[in-house]
Amino acid sequence: MKDATFAPTFARYDYIIIGGGTSGCALAATLSQNATVLVLERGGSPYENPTATDIQNFATTLSNTSPKSWSQLFVSEDGVYNTRARVLGGGSVLNAGFYTRAGDDYVKEAEWKRDEVEAAYEWVENKIAFEPPVMGWQTALKDGLLEAGEFPYNGFTYNHTYGTKIGGTIFDNVGQRHTAANLLEYANPDTVAVYLHATVHKILFTTKGRPRPKAYGVIFQDENGVLHKAELAKNAMNEVILSAGAIGSPQLLMLSGYDNPSVRFNYYQEPEDLKKCVEGITTIIKVINSKAFSKFKYPEATIPGLLDLILNVPTNLRPRHVTSVFNLKQFCIDTVMTIWHYHGGCQIGRVVDKNYKVLGIDGLRVIDGSTFLKSPGTNPQATVMMLGRYMGQKILKEREAFFKKKEEEA
Image (tube, rainbow, N blue to C red; front, side, top):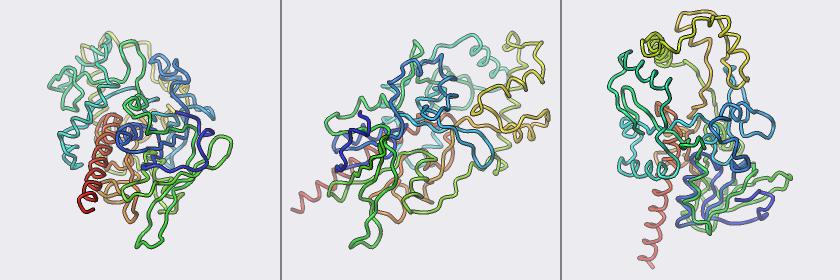
């Protein structure tokens, strides 16, 4: 892992991964077992400031949106404050740490192989996932959910199940965060190069002697403004892979001339989304009114006081509007805010095929949360990391089969 200022002005690799985030780190570690890999990350290292990855500093780190912070502030066209990660490890360095797998139905709809998905999750979990300690208020929340009828009780599990459970976390028993960057410990250090503060300007394509474009390299810039060029080594199986996330991946396709994407959050454009919000708030009200949660009520709290509290939080943690309307549907609409789990932008069937290859272009894939048609229904980081491992292994198998066939034909 080096700063991009130390990168050669020109080099070749088997795979070029744009984005050292939640998916990119898992993907790079896997591909490096049998290929040379370049990872280009626009942010810095999560190891530069160990206190920032302590659970006690979670909110401070996330709300720090200064120009070179790990958390980049932006506002959607819907007017909602949001953030993008710019650090090796991506969103797993900034989030609240919840770790839960996607449900069985989600895996089935994605047409992933269940046994390989299971193995990929376990690969991730062996490095970064933990069973959390349960505090008093969390026990009350659990009991309150059961009082509200959220059955069955599943105990501790990484699985996404109906009912109530204790989920996983990426914080260990002393409150230290473990991130996707830790998955690079699996990588072959002799075959992987990770450059930080490397901003990719565009993907390079060629049409020479080809019926359609083929990705063959990238142009990236270091912090000193020096441009570098990385190309794929001469081999039919080598690829450029976008893992820049739900915002970055469609943006880079646009900058590279692929298309002009429409990327909007579309809050509550589907009636089912609004229905789920109302159902969720209804359940929360039941929990708050439960016997189990009674000792956590504060009679002196007033609605104006709570509204003032909301207005005093950092801008990237604040709802779009704050009103006193208590119709639950209207409340959902007026107080819409992000929990940062955005996805889509390069969806399967629209931008990529089921092997995550960009439609109409050779040598280019997108492997990250931008390909999801819908949310896994929980914090997506576990599934995004799993996808990096899952697809990395699939790509290596395809690579091995290709070379084996060439040997047999020789």
